Image (cartoon, rainbow, N blue to C red; front, side, top):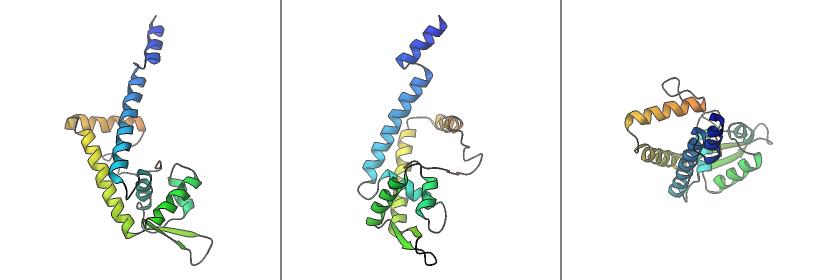
Length: 165
């Protein structure tokens, strides 16, 4: 009897997992929609994610190095970089020692766009979190960090290993 009830919960979406996924999808769509709308026309969410990765270290990158950090295909990375270069967000230059290697660096315009994008992303997150008390905000971050298997900032500093583009 208990198993049948559990199966009914899963089928109806009333299980904990179903409720979590329904909320997660709704929130993700809202964040994506608002971010794309507010970043446009200067930047896309994917371009902001690329700039996040590129600005993790000082210096330039190769496409191969970027692909290690971005969870997407090499073709998608190339397409995003092409658009970013066209809009002046990044610059590509040939390596002086090995002309086969192309170095990619964030331009001043790209850094400015990234700073604006980070502000917008934080404002959107703050708007979503404002629906919760300060205690529940901290609790949500704690629980999500546990579910995602990542340490919170208090446990250790931010250390992104991969970014979805």
